[in-house]
Image (tube, rainbow over all chains, first blue to last red; front, side, top):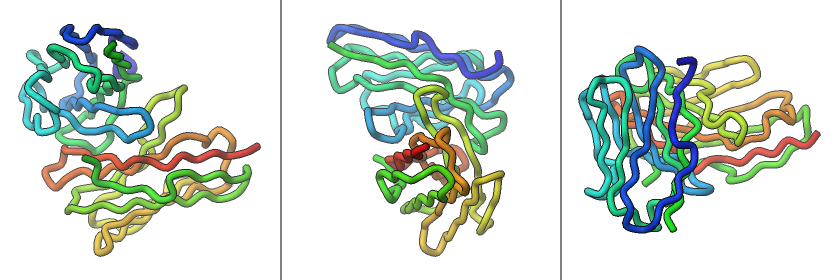
Amino acid sequence: GAGVSQSPRYKVAKRGQDVALRCDPISGHVSLFWYQQALGQGPEFLTYFQNEAQLDKSGLPSDRFFAERPEGSVSTLKIQRTQQEDSAVYLCASSAGQGNTEAFFGQGTRLTVV
Amino acid sequence: SQQGEEDPQALSIQEGENATMNCSYKTSINNLQWYRQNSGRGLVHLILIRSNEREKHSGRLRVTLDTSKKSSSLLITASRAADTASYFCATVDTGGFKTIFGAGTRLFVKA
């Protein structure tokens, strides 16, 4: 596609519910990143994939967060047993080569846990 | 946790004036990037400066990097109302991929 696509754009979850957020990166992009952005703050790094390999997951806040990219293209960020503090915008970005030399961001998924 | 700290947190200027934003960071980097975010277009990459570069230009943007002081600045010349947005610096670690954003500078350009 022309850009990074994320779905859904908005998600309201009841506390304790599991959610899955999808990211379609730019076709052919090797690197994929997930970030969490709280209101009024900069994005916080969650995890990084190079093709299907998850090279860094140090930013995932807890073991309730899980990300995968099984075929090296589409990625899913799953949050189990959502809590109110998980409410944020989740951003996905991709870049053509290894690492981050120019990342293209999707519009994000705004998650609200009620 | 966020590495970069932008200064000022907010900036309001008249159209046509220049805007300068500063960023400080804490660890060694591979490169430093500036991004713009507004509600219409999301987060957009503006410019990248590598750790061995000191200055870079792109259109109305000028970025400087001082690795000895662990700081960078972004200058936007002849600002326009459309430049109204939040601006973030982002450092990429020496591994080349872990990207840490600052809290951002909110720029408001009055027409």
